[in-house]
Length: 280
Image (cartoon, rainbow, N blue to C red):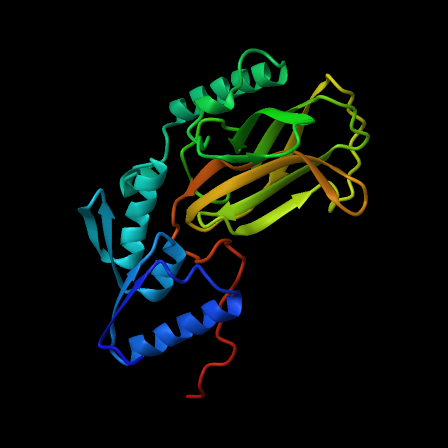
């Protein structure tokens, strides 16, 4: 077709990767030809890649209209409930506040490690109650904590913090070599990083049925601004295939402020230099 106006409403999620690439290539050629395109989607990545301007609706009402990147940021705030103004993202906590938070974090972590009380994770902002869960139930991730530079109380991250994930796992049968894994995903559920004890060749000790073990995972991802989610899993591996005992997907949400220094998912170290200026 050769339209003056093209309306696309959430149809490009179908088809294989090659078909989708063909569609996006056609849309790009239409844009270059001056065709007016109305693109409706919940995929922020698709909106940012294909649209100059965006209009955000909630309940049939206009929330924001403007550059696509700015509207997507507002959409994330509404979707994930962070509602953080730029001034809050840029603010540096007072020294006294940091000290109080660190002391409280240490107390809560001690209680967690001592296996005291009810699950901790529902009380933290990063917990996503819309998580998805699968597994055969032979083990259970009964609790977890996430710390950023050893602090339990965080909202919007700068992106370069050291993250430590504590997983409390209860076993209902003996597992000879428990396998622990994690994955970091985008808002569109695309896995952008991950690892597990099989990949790392780390053989944990045998866990007996009825025992509760606590494991820790430490990563330093150097994230760009955006919205991210963690998947956590406990499984059994026979050398060829996985047996999922418990997997919690999109269970923890991280909101990272845009530093303006990099784009994409990760802040990869880079440098720029003039190798040879023009002769004068």
